[in-house]
Length: 129
Image (cartoon, helix red, strand yellow):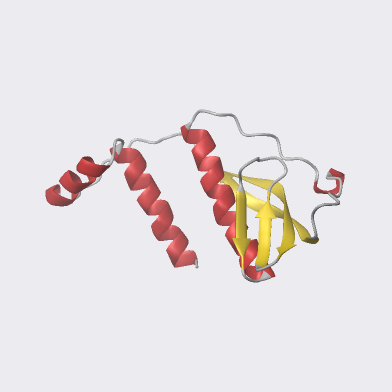
């Protein structure tokens, strides 16, 4: 995976903070505190980039943080660069898994590999929290 940094704007809201990425429409996050909003932004970015990759959509080139004009409708609390991971190429691996667990996965997941990769991302994010 290759690291990529996207500019993000943290805005004050009535009940906390919201985060949006000017280069990635629809990629948003939030938090009760400024710190929570900043931490949650990285997870939102990773999920957004993974979705783009799964859909075969090219990643937009990150813009320059200093070149983003202020929006008079936004009460900015901070601007920051958020680190994300551009998914690398898929690698075929062989794993062993309980056959009952595999059957349960196959009943709910249209794509076994995607399901296992998503579960690994969730588990890794929980360990880093």
